[in-house]
Image (cartoon, rainbow, N blue to C red; front, side, top):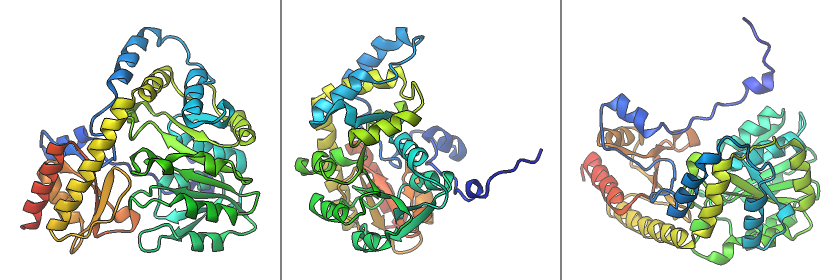
Length: 363
């Protein structure tokens, strides 16, 4: 059977996720591996979220609340926003898809830093739009270059802060200056998947970004700091008028009942979030010190991972770590063949990673 696939769909580069730990262990014939490749919360989910999830299982035969009434209002209260400014998604990825579906037409342009989260380009191309990558400068988003690439066909500008995989954060002042330069009809999407790990809590307030005259969407997720990656629940913060447009194209029941219940409970577990931050901050400091002691260049990071450089190609080191049951993320697909990214784990996992890396490097 021959299918006619539109050229702009065939042009989409498939997303290549990190392999599940179970599959890697089967392939390599190893057990007891530690996965430090996907920027997950090393502590797992909040105990309160797990308890709420268990209590909700008997109602799984019911459809979820399509509006996400309780969760939407809890997020809004916590951030000082109106409920009408919150749109829930099956992961924050879905908010990207809704934006593309609602606002992009064939031939429109979408600006994005390069490298960046692959879904930005995938959603742009799926809508027939043209992705316009703007290379990083010194491992940082080049706001000046991005502003210079805005043209008559630009419809959406994607930014991620902290940036993945570099860990760099765009300060609120610099971000405000960039947004002020955008035309009124351009939507700025600020992906803040790792914002809970930023050490200055004042930088996490989304209101200064949303109170300006231009359309801005701030993306957040429960997959990282809240430890709910397997449930896929994220949200977008935006002007109420823009949210109303997204609700026109949002599928009903897009966030399942279990995800809503667990996310509500996770928001209430402030002690768990504080402990997650502490573990990550201490882990970042420990890993950076260990990497630098090995003579390796390590980028500063405000996320829960570190990107570091190796003297030569990173692939042999990645394979050597795999052989020792330590899974990290190679970055050749991001354009950095001599770099690896390691997520913060529990203290014993961080030590195991450094011991394995020292052995692989022969230090």
